[in-house]
Image (cartoon, rainbow, N blue to C red; front, side, top):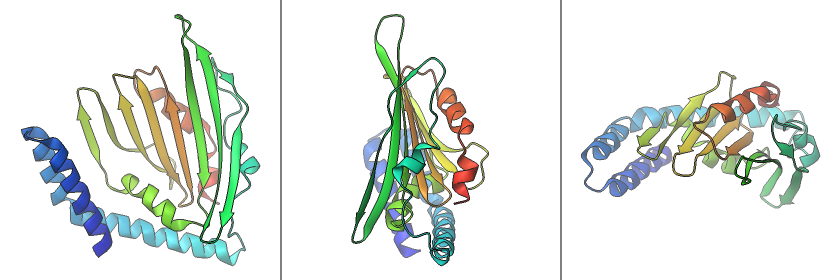
Length: 215
C-alpha cells in the first residue's frame, strides 16, 4: 500500500509541475492528491485480485502466455470500410519475462487520397504480472483530464473485469483506447481521423473481451 500511495503522490507532483501557473489545472491536481488514499486502496484491491487469479491459473497449469496465433483469433479479421493487413505477432520467453502479442492494421484512403489506419494490439502478460500491474495503474485511478486539445480518462464499456482508459487528441484527430482484460491481457486500439473515441469503443465492444477476461 505504501508503494502505491507513493506512486500516486509522484503522479500528483508530476501533474502539478506540468501545470505551471494555470489555476484550474493546479486545482485539479490538488483534488487528485486529496483522492490519493482512496485511489491507493482501489489499486491495492485490484492487485490482490490479480494475484488470486494468477494463483488460480497456476493450479490449472496455465502459466505461460498464449501463442500469438491464438491471440489473433480475438482480433477482428476485418473492419467495414478498411482493408485488413496481415496480422503480426510474437512470443517472448526468457528468465523472469514471458509474454506474447498479436496486432493487426486496417487501412483506407480518404477523399484526399491520404491513407489513414486503425491498429489493434493484444498482449498476454500471463507469466509477467509485474508488467501487467504497471500497465493496469491508470485504469485504477478514476482519472480524467481535458483541455483545448482533447481529453483522457478512465472508462467502462460494460464488460466485467475490463477497465479501460481513453485518450483523444484534437490536433491529430487520434483516438486511442487501452484496456486491462481479466487481470491478464492488455488491449490497445488506435484510430486516425476520428471526431472522438466512439468508433474505437464500438470496435472494442465487438470483440470477445468477456471470453478473454475469463481466462
